[in-house]
Amino acid sequence: MSDGGGDFGRRRFLQGMAGAGAGLAVGGGSLLGQTAGPDQGSEPRRAPAVRTGQVAPDVAVVGAGAFGVWTALHLRRQGARVTLVDQHGPANSRATSGGETRGVRTSYGDRPHGRQWGEWAAEAMERWKAWDEEHASDLLPPVYFTTGDVILRDELTPFLERTMENWDAMGHAYELLDADEVRRRWPAIHTPDVSVALYEPAAGVVRARRAIESVAQVFLREGGELRIGRVRPPDSEGAPLEALSFEDGSTLSADTYVFALGPWLPKYFPELLGTRVRVRTLGHVYYVATPPGDDRFQYPNLPSYNVPGVTGWPALPSDFRGFRIRTGGHRGDDPDTSVRWIDEEYHDRPREVLGRYFPDLADLPFNETRACHYCGTVTRNFYIDRHGGMENAWIAGGGSAEAFKQGPVLGEFIAGRVLGEIPDEDELARSFRIPDEEFEADEGGPD
Image (cartoon, rainbow, N blue to C red; front, side):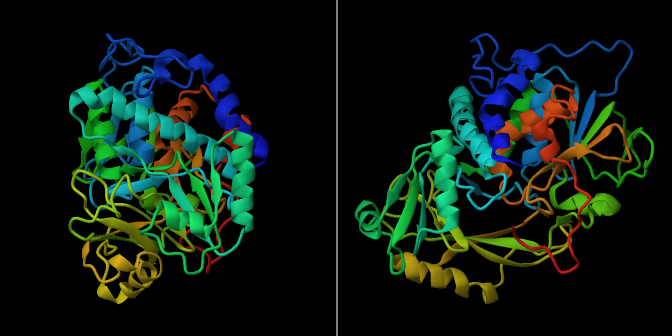
């Protein structure tokens, strides 16, 4: 996709969604710059269509992760009757979106579609903050923390240069720092091999599990339905899908179906996605204890950080689970059986990184570990496309480790596609198509 697609992310997307009306509001506003009035509260932004004598939902969304829960909420706010389906429920521990935290940044200079992702991520930052403001009166815990993000490198790489080009085109604020300035601002960071740092002040961290739970809660309050149960893989190739079949023998009918199944997508659609989505690797996340009485490693005193192959951020209030570090991962092809705890054989790598950049944490205990699947795609972009064999079914997935960040905007786009507000021939819609290309047998792994 060309850089023109990135421009769409902030401007043409606003125009292209204009026909959807005020039903797009998220948090206190919408893509159209409209603000919900004080009397709107928990009401849907548009009254649901009246379907006399019909009890089936308009749309069934299968999978309550970042793709599914935001799509369900936007569909509901655009007037659809929606049932959200998940085998365990929103934010469960086996879901890719069920971890404790996720970073939100716009530094995508390493992606051919980096400008468009950056535009969406920048918009999502504002949406996350608006979500907290809108629901503060509901006593929902805040989910977004503006930490800033610093990328540490030993030289000015093409990734950094391309990221700055994208930011210049976006008008997005950043700073280019040297190692002395990094140490001056954040004394807890050591810089043994750092000569350049790229700082994004607007970046932040989301409480992932809390966020998914809160979006699901608002979806239900606004008239959506949630059904817990495991759906069997559909077998309606070449014909419209008539109903979802559950493992307990029950069924659920809808007009349209959205399969937002994360790492389960290739299991459910092996012919379509078995060679176009890779879920071989689980990322390793560790939460490290911080020294009692020492707030250097806690928000807001430290930004999130990026060193080669490793990301992380400070401990967040109010539970302070610990200082977060993510390294590589282990194999785990099947999301139903993959091991989600991290064996001690993998602990040397995070200890090495801590010792290099955060030596005061190197010997402190791990409070907990997390592991979830990477869902890489052939295109390295998301898949938002019709299922070619079932004319009333959609595929939404292939997060490539970045979908959660963009969830508030991503879900709106998917809803617009499903409801026909964004046509198939649209430039951005084409960029999310499931390709003819496939992974080679030895390809895959983290993106």
